[in-house]
Length: 172
Image (cartoon, rainbow, N blue to C red):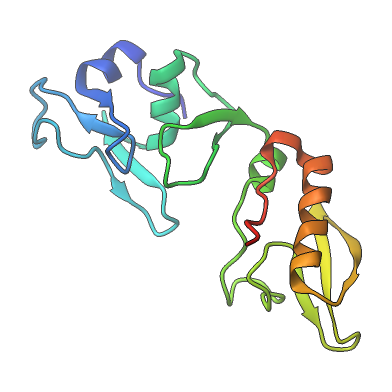
């Protein structure tokens, strides 16, 4: 659905990097709102949602619009460094946005034996395996004796496949 007019948003909301949603309510008199309080509530997926003018909007989409003046329309708004940095935003395709996702937590995917994204333990081969998924196809990157080596290989391929959108493993 289309976003509210920018002038109206700026009347009632302002950008604030200390707010977990990236937004706070302005001083303007809006019924049921405490001035300077955090705008929105967190949903079950960890995203902040703001109720505004009888609609519900993802806070990062409103924040991007307020920062740039550009309505993201059908595009995805990507958190450059994840949800911890609510105002570091950019436009992205769905594929670019998925490349910037975190490693899935245990239980949501079948292969979560490693602490690194794109790496899992292969019981048959008795080795660490690196894979990367792009456009719904999994690419095998090799077997490795060391979990870190597999993570490094994943990082190399992620940079080639996704460039600036790649979410790389942090390797000690």
